[in-house]
Amino acid sequence: MSLLIVLVVLAACAAATIHLGRGLRPITIAAALLLAGFVLLLPIGLDPAIVVDRGRLWLCTALFATPVVVALGAWWRLGAAASPTSLPKLLIVGAAGSLLSGLALVRAANMTFDAGPATPHTARIALLESVGSRRGRTWHVELGDTGLPNVGRLRVDEDQYARLRVGMPVNVAVHRGALGIRWVEGIAPAP
Image (cartoon, rainbow, N blue to C red; front, top):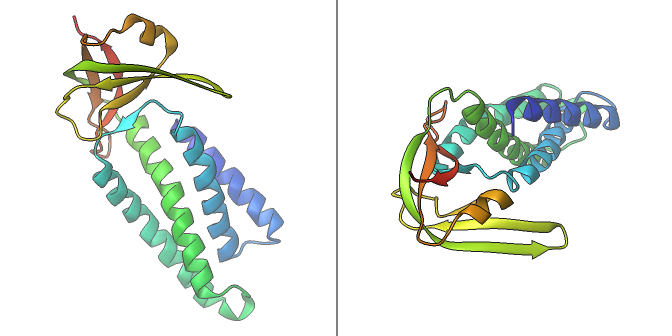
């Protein structure tokens, strides 16, 4: 998912909640972040790119979310007399929203601004799996030891799935990431 899509969804959710909430208040911004987080994380489940360094991803997300929640709390405190929202409700919605939105934003920024080339890691295909549902069919590849954490099962397209065989060596394309959060772009048959 591109960074531009993430920013457009954040802006659209903010505009919608400000309009529906009848004004710019801390709770409307917190609700916009929460709504945007859910909207942005749904397609990530469909995105074949896999984040290798999940701990670092959550650290960067927390570094994004903490100042947002503090700012929402300070904003509420400054206008507490005019705000019917309780501080705990604001902090819960704000924390959840900034974490979910931050996760999508950090992930997209890490991949979008990653200008470096991918590093190939060799692995072997341990299992090929085709799963059908009401929404269609998805194809997955289980890899043997890649030497990378969190990389074992990858989603591939139908054409790539048809060219792969169990036991076949493949190169796993791993990017360094602009924020230092490694991510897998995909796999290709090893030469």
